[in-house]
Length: 158
Image (tube, rainbow, N blue to C red; front, side):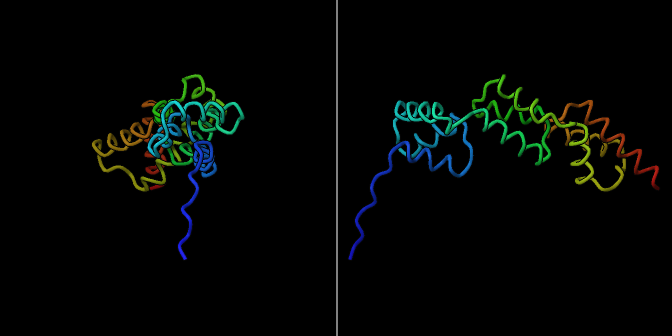
């Protein structure tokens, strides 16, 4: 006996299904809904309705992303750029970063030491290590200070 075809999901149900898995930015949610065949205008109205009911929030999304990216070892510049790519406003990004307000030097140091367990052999290697931190979104002054401190401590132990 054949099963009856499933009922088509409403746009709201699709959006809630996506939001039940994890927080989504409005831009991300709209892109996913449109990809599933929902008209842009209908997606916009649905997202506005969900945001009005506090079921979708760019603020919550930004906070979640900031916490996750800090844990992944990324710095404030990289996190800000990623949130901006999701359509998050600058003031929301600033607020989310300030709410977490980690000691960026400590975050950089933890991930630097996890990645590099030995002393750099030469200046070229030191530059690569500082560049690695900078590419992860840490300010260059923090990257240089973390690398220099780690090197000095390693040499003192030897």
